[in-house]
Length: 160
Picture 1: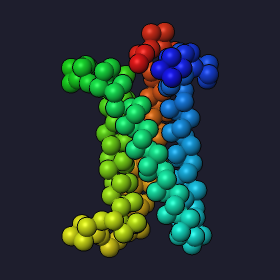
Picture 2: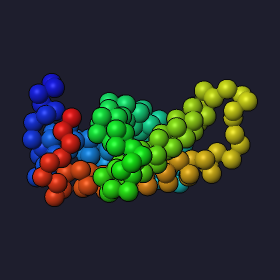
Picture 3: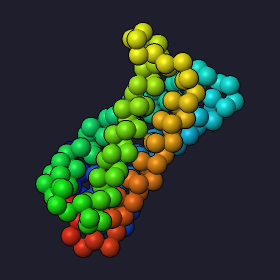
Picture 4: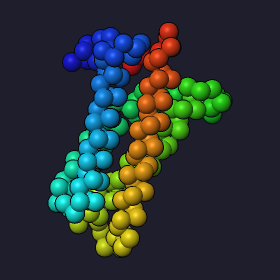
């Protein structure tokens, strides 16, 4: 399986298979979040909850499996000295936005599924959902920028 991840990618960039697959899964998760938001607007709250919960779980798996280690190995060693370089800035911005979206998304998901402890329950649920969704979409856009920064017009991309 590890050999598959390191094969050349299928999107025509200098990315490997794992990076291309990560991009596609990230876009699929964004689509699931968007369909879930649309379901809420239509009043289909059970479907909304299922889609949003599924997207948060998939996002947690993707971040844990395919994003944390490359950041640790390729970006963190250059910080803070090289933060003014595009590669380090864009990737760190994505990490900060993505971490914020993930933590808030988990929090909102726990609350929405009745799993949040009573002292941490909040009342303005719609506001928290909208902020979480907005952060995730922003992190997704910056994630696309990361992909282009790492793998498009980069003859020596970081290879994990």
